[in-house]
Every structure is written in structure tokens, then in C-alpha cells.
Length: 306
Image (cartoon, rainbow, N blue to C red; front, side):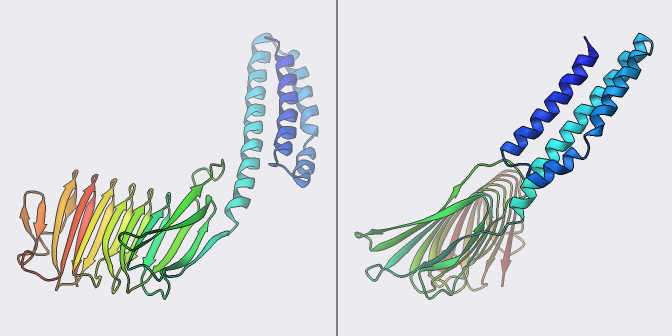
């Protein structure tokens, strides 16, 4: 192998890569000027290659290989820095993608709220005078809102979905995707949540939510299920997760567990175990009931009675 030609090829390759990065927007004019300040490095490389030729052949090969590796490392550093700088600029932006303000449908007697998001920080509270309101801040895609009315059951259906975009950058970092939502306290509501690996906080105190269908990846969930409904039915499907559930002491509760090697404190909270089912003593006779089915990987399930 002709090492001089190899070094020359590396120089041409490096210049070509810089121009390519500039064409795709990874380098601006100021960055290019900064890189051009190091043009004497080219002369140094040529001078070193001439010196190496004056050495015995084994030493010439050895030092030429070291120089080639140093140049490759330098090119890799330049490319990584350019990509990271562009990523940092994108990550520093705080984009408010959507302000939600969904009013009632006067014909509706029930509501179904469907939330589809990727990996996110999702917070849901009650107390909205509207059917649904809130703010979504995201840099990974613009969410969309769709509505339909099911006349047979007089149900107003709202779906808020994350239309994620795929982009390179921010390697090893979390992408901002924060959902802060409020629902109405008075209309009978079913919540349907489809999320990736997320942090999910749902404070349903004093709402009229009577059903929750939550499907997520490996997540941390904090769920307060003190709704006004006489019967609440919840279904949780997740990867290896931490699931914290809060319910009032005056509610009867049943938990059906279909989990891997998981830990829970259900018996410590006074629930009786029957195979995969845990329930309070008075569950069958109680007026207000909460029933939860949990299908998860190796998880930690914690119940708090207050």
C-alpha cells in the first residue's frame, strides 16, 4: 500500500465530508471559517509523511499508520461535534405543539378519551370546565386531535395522537414530550391510554371516570383512583414497571395479577389472596368497587389506602 497516497486520500475525504456536512445544514458559515483556521494541519501532515519516508521502512510504516489513525479520529471528532451541535440546538428549542380546548357535545351523555403517545411524561388531572383541555410540548412530533360521536350510546369520542417524526440527533438523550391534560369531573368517562416507556401520573380524584385501559412500555405509573363512580374497572398492560395505586379506604378493591417475577404489598394492605386474585373481605357486598387487572413484566406494584 502506498501510504502517501492513503494520507492524501484522507485529506481529500476530510474536505469532502466538511462540504457535505455544510450542504446538509450541519455546518454554518461561521463553523466552516473556524475549521479553515486549522488548514496548516494539512502542511504538517505532508511534512510528516516526507519525514517518515526518510526513516527505515518498518518505522515509516509504523508512524504513517499512527498518523492515519490520528487523522481518522480527527475526522470522526469533527463529524460528531457537528451533528451534536445541531442536535443541541434542536433540543434547546421549546416547541408548544398543541393547546387543547375541547368543549362538550351537548348531545353526549358519555365520553371516551383516547390518548396515543410515544415515550412521554403524561399527567392527567380532573377539574376542567371543558370536556378536555391541556398543553402538549413536544419536539418529536405534532399531535393531532380527532372527534366522533357514537349516536347509539350517546358517546363523545376524542382521540389525541402523537404523529411522531423520525430524526437523527440527540443520541443518548431524552426527547421532550410532555403532556399535561385536564378532564371534566362530571361526565361519565372512559380513559384509553396507549403509551411507550413513560412516566404516567393520573389523579382521577372526584372525576367520573369509570374505566381505564392503559397500555404502556416499561413505565412508572402513579394512579389515584378515587373517582365518583360506584364501579371502576381498570386494565393495565405494561413492561417491567413501577405501578403505584392509591384508593380510599372506604372502597372495596379487587386486583387480578398476571405478572412475571413481581413484588407487591397487596396482602400487607389487608387484601386476601386467591391464586392470582387479591381482594378486600367485603368486596362482593360493597357499594363502591374498584377492580383492576394488571398484566405486566417483572414489576413493582404498590397499593396505598388513604
